[in-house]
Amino acid sequence: MAKEGYHFIGTATGSGNPSSITFADIPSGYKALVMMSAVKNSNGGGTLYQASVQFGTSSSIDTGANYYWHRAGSTNSTTYAASRNTGQNYVYMLDYPGYGYSTMASARSIIWGYDNTNQQTMISTWGGYSFNGTTANSNKIWSGGWTNTGVMTHMKIEPGSGVNFDTEANFTLWGMK
Amino acid sequence: MAGTFDLIGSHTVTAAAGDAAINFTGIGTSHDDLYVLLECYGTTAGTLQLNCNSNSSNVWSGFGRQFTATGTTADFMDTSSAAKTKFNAALVNNYQSNMSLYEMYFTGYRDTAVQNVPIINYRNISASYDVRVGDSFAAFGAGTSSNATAITAINLNLDTGNFGQNSRCSLYGISNTI
Image (cartoon, rainbow over the protein chains, first blue to last red):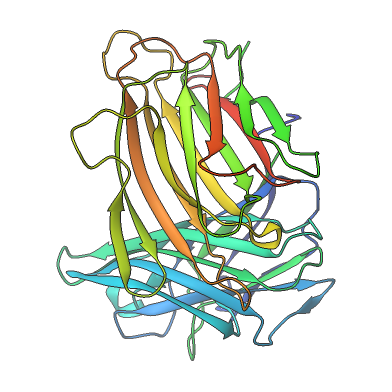
């Protein structure tokens, strides 16, 4: 077993079309967590959905207005001005197209401060997708945080309002030593 | 024998007053690329600028884009033709609870066959917009030193003040073959 570098923690898929996916009992002791995501929903028809993430200590996911986020990037030919918001119920992590677009969005997230009680848990995700060249495209950096400074052990990912994950969706979590 | 992703060195700021610089020296040539993961904040109030240098080079150029606050998108670093004494790598905040995070890739750091090496690609992701902090930003960019020698030292500092206590930085070596 390697003593440093990337350590595999777990993987989760959209098998059964869940409305959310949770990584539970995430171990402490890593400098940062890294998550690779491939996201698609099973019943969405539009071109733009937004997957989001929430955190928790023990088995309790915090669903309160204790999150903030910052967005930068572009969708199709529009470059959006940077935007931010606080007092939110989650952190957005990835824009992706609905099921009808038969493509998946991919992303890499890095999560830091998650086991340090001097710090809040923070996440930044760089991801996007392209479908058919000009039909539906997005590339964004979503960054944000959870105002709780407790040791984060649970992370819940949702595909957006009113939709479920497609069976092909998958997430892999590593810890970096 | 080098692995594919090896920890070369790490530094944690332990002093209450902070550290003026984070330095890695004696970097060998066993790997193909270098990767730096920096989690930091500054001891001086406000947004600060992170500076990066290697081998005390003084002929840097670079370009990046930062997305700051609401509606602000700006090019930054060296957008002129003049060479700089360091690589200006966007912003750091001054809250320990909301540290800024940097990822830097020193691609081909040991390559002496090409003049303008190394190239540093980085992104800075600091989403420090909670109720106490007045700013948030994300940035990415690239910098180049025309010092065509292998990198053996990396120096990181802030334009004002010190890295705050508990800031930490790790240097990894990446190998392209196993």
